[in-house]
Amino acid sequence: MADYSNITLTREGAVARLVLNRPERRNALTQAMMLELEDAFKRVASDGECRVLVLRGAGGHFSAGGDLAVMADMPPEPADGVVDPLVASYRQFGDALLALNRVPQPTVSVVEGSAVGGGFGMVCCSDVVILHESARFGLPEPKAGFIPSQILPFIVRRIGEGPTRDLALTARVIDAAEAHRLGVGRHVCTTTADLNRTLKGVIEDTLKLEPQALAAVKRLVLSTAASDDRSVLDDAAHSLVALLRRPQASEGIEAFMRKTAPSWTKG
Picture 1: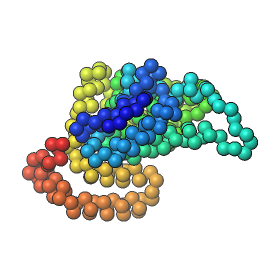
Picture 2: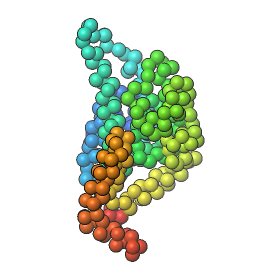
Picture 3: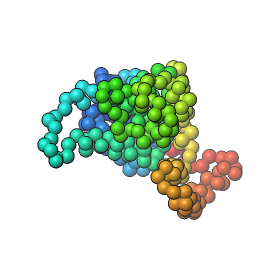
Picture 4: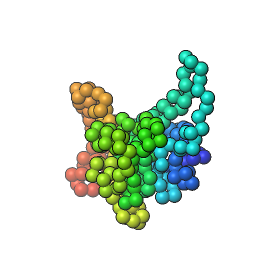
């Protein structure tokens, strides 16, 4: 789908696959990588042929968060009264996370090894998370004297304020089993083969569902965190009626009643 230096983005049929591709650094995030991620998420969102996005890290790790070697190389502090240019650079990762969170297609993260800091945040922006037993999550930034910045809203929404406070204020690392209990991921797999089988099943399940209906329900679920209930319910009613008036709904209802497969399951 596109050429990048730090990630790969491909699509085969209806399935797009994004791989974080800095295995020599455990896929640690740099500014260049974060810009590529934001571009890739927007590219997927606008791809009418894509029906599911799979995220994975190369080399046995999802992402070790921000690349400390890059972060330690600080430019000179600007003069008094001048906005520090680093603020916009780090704020941009928040925009990348928002872009991932708002991708209209279902997103699936496959997590092996480290998924800390920014990696943890990306996982929490995914709709379905499949965990290998090697997966490890944490917010270790305060150990190095800084904070997990742009990822906090997404982690709080995923696991709640209490668990996030515990993780953020102890910097402890949790394993796949605890991440599963907290609701980070739905599946825990012990082998790579099991991981791939589970992913295949999730993709197959997703491709049985009508794409525009999925996009609408995902948008409504996300809106509940930012809008009042009446606004969400009004939007949901209008969306439901608009979807029901399409030929896809007539086809889908008839197929459901006849116990046959509608046309979009063949995509």
